[in-house]
Length: 302
Image (cartoon, rainbow, N blue to C red; front, side, top):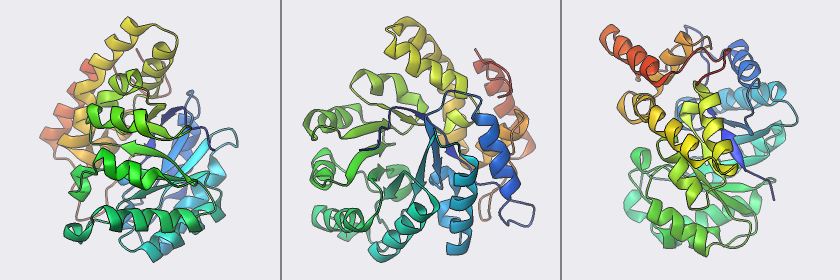
C-alpha cells in the first residue's frame, strides 16, 4: 500500500488571465514547495477547482504536475465525479499520468439517493477499476453529505481502498474509523485547523490548504508531534488557526490564491463564477497572515 504519512498541500490550479491552464505556474509552485519536507501533493482537489475544468484540462494538469513533482514525492490525484463511469475514467487518466493514488469525492447531486448501498457500490466499482490505490474523500461543506463512520467503514472494506481524507473535523468519527478500520487503512486530516488533534488519535498526516502558504509550520506540527515535542506542536497549531480559517471556510480558494501571490508563489485568478477578494477582504487577509507569522515561502517560517 502507498505510505501516506506526512503533509500534502492540495495545490491550487494555476490559470492565466483568460482562465486557461498556466503550466508554468503549476511547475513554479511545485518547484518552490519542494524546498520543504512535504510528502507530496494533491492535484485537483477542492482547492484545485476540479469541478471547473474540462476533461482535457484535467489531463493537462495531471501531466504537468507529475512531470514537475520529483520521484521521491507522492502525487495524489483528485478524481471525483458525479457518475461512477466518469470517476473511473478520471482515475485511469490520473494513473496513466503517474499518480500514486486517487482521491475520490462522493457523488452528491442526487444526495437523497446516496445511501450506504449506493456509496459502497460507487467506491468499490472505482477501486476495482483503478490501477492505483483509492482514498475516500469526505467533504461535507462542499457535498452536503457527511458520511458516517459506519458508511466509511463499509466503503473501506476493499483491498484497493487505502485511506480517507476527512475534512469534516469530527474527531469522534475519525477516531471510530481509525479504531475499527483494517490494518493499513490510513486517515488524513483534511484541514490544518485540526491537524494536531487528528494526529493525536492516529491520523497519519494531513492534506492541508494551509500547507500551500505555510508549509514549514504545517510540517513542524507533524514533526514535533512525532518527536514527542507536544508543547511546540500545540503552540504552532494555535498560531495557524485564524489563517487556516481565512483561506478555507471564510473566503476559500480566492483567499488562498491571494495569499500565494502575496507570499511569492503563483496564485493568480479563480475560475468564474468564483470571485476574487475585494480590497477590504484582501487587507484583512494580509493582517491575519502577518499575525500568524506566515512569511514568504522561500524563507523559513516560525
